[in-house]
Picture 1 (tube, rainbow, N blue to C red):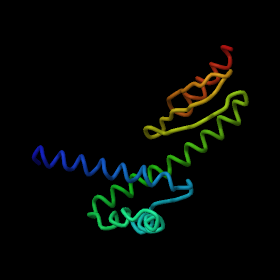
Picture 2 (spheres, rainbow, N blue to C red):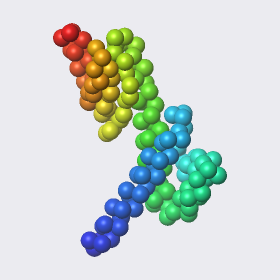
Picture 3 (tube, one colour):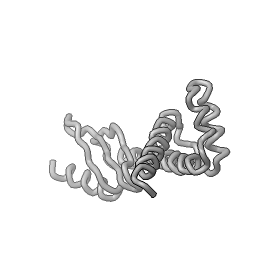
Picture 4 (spheres, one colour):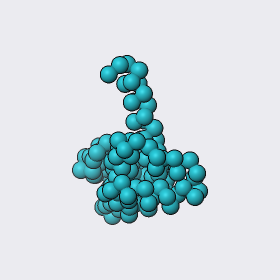
Length: 139
């Protein structure tokens, strides 16, 4: 594989990732993308609003399979983020959870407000709960 073909491949993978995160904006968190047909149906439902999405269906099969994998990760991630947010809100009543984002598999960043200050904390769900518990005990 030449340097140019590696760069093109990297660019194509980045394009697929960008499309997956673009699609995230329109997901409810209940989507399950187990087949290419599931993905195509979802894209079809949005292609009336965004004409450029209709070209995605004509991508090469490997790119569609990569997009399926990425959108599946994004959909699962949304469910995990929501679950963690609800768990933290239930456990820590004095903390206002603003946003939870998964940046790596099972690694999250939580943005929250405590004592009027906006803060962020990162780690696994267990690490985040331990750090929040420690912060509450320190105050």
